[in-house]
Image (cartoon, rainbow, N blue to C red; front, side, top):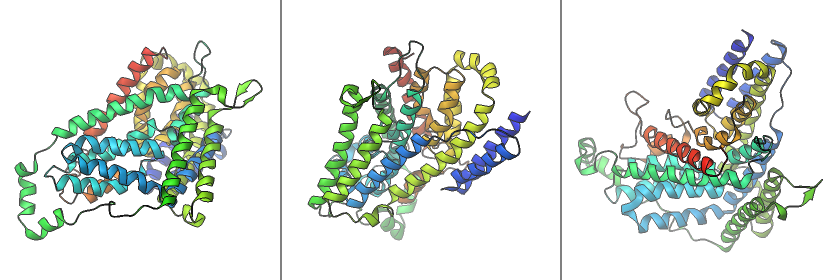
Length: 447
C-alpha cells in the first residue's frame, strides 16, 4: 500500500511541477524527497551527480557558442539551404533543425529558424503547417542523435553501469550507431508525411477567407524574416570551428578508447571525456574570441540548460528514493512481464517524458528503473526515442512558438486539444525511430 501512496506523491509532484513549468519541475522533487524521508521513512536515494555535471559542462560550452555568435554561422548556413530549395522545404526544414540540434546538443536552436521556415513556405505558396510542425518535432528528435546532448550523455552513463549477459557494456559509439540512423529515418518519415498533409493554400477555404481581408493578408505575408543580411565576423567563425572541433574529438575518442588515457588499466570514461572537452571548448572560445563572459549566463541556451539541471536533480532523486526502496518487490512483480513485453517499458518512458517535458529527465528517471527490473540494455537503447513524448499535448515551448510564428493559422491546436499539428509528426517520428532502433539493435547483436 505504501508504494502506491509514494507513487501518487511522485505523480502529483510531476503533474504540478509540469503545470508550473521551468525550474518548478525540479523544485517539486524537493517536496517529494522530504515526504519520502520524513513521512515514509525511506533512505534518500542518490542524485545522478555525473549526469548533472555533464549537463553543466555541455550547457556552458553551448551557451558560450551562442554568446560568441558562432551559432549564427550555423543558422545562416541552414537558411541558405532552405532559400535555395524552397519547393522542398517540407523535407529540408525538419532535417535542418534536427542537424542543428545534433551539432549543438539542444533543441532550443529551433526558435531562430521557425520564422525563416515560415517565410520560405508562405512566399512559395506552401502550407506553413507542413514544414513548421515537422521542424519543431524534428528539432527535439535530434537530441537523441547528438553526441553532446544531455539525454545521450545520461543514457551512456547509465548503460556503462549495466553490462549485458556476456559482460559486454554498450558504449558511447554503439549508442550513437543506433540513435543517429534511427533518428534520421524518423525525421525522413516526418518529412514525407508533411509533404502531403493538409490542404494546399489555394484549396483551403479558411486560409482564403483570411487573405480576402487586405489587413490580414499583409500580416500573413508581411516582410521577410532573415538572417542573411547579418555580416559575420572572424570571431564567430573561430567559435563555431572550436565547438565543432570539440564535438569531433569527443566522437573520435568515443570510437577509439585506446586514445583516451588509461587509469587502473581502463580507459577514462566517456562521461569525464565529454565534460573535459566541453569545458575546454568553452574556455578556448572565451580566450580566442572577444566574447564577453558576462553574456554567457544570460543566453537562452544557458537558462534552459540550468533548468534541466534542477529538473534532473529533483526528479531523479525523488524517483530513485522510491524505486530503490521497493526494488525487490518491483523485480518480483515486473521482471518477467517486462522481459516478455519489453515494449511496455517504451510506453511508460513515453508517458513519463510527457509528464516531465524533457528527454534527459525521462531517461534519468526511467532508465535506472528499467535496468533494475530486468529490461535488457539492448532494449533500453533500441527504445531510447520513446523518451520524446512531450509532443502529445501542445505545451512545449518550441511547439507553442511554431504556432505563434505561423501567421497563416495553419499550424494550430484543434478543438479537442489533442488534435493539434504536432501529434501526427511526433507519433510517426518516434514510432519509426523505435522500430529502426529495434532492427539495428538486433542486427548488431545487442538484443
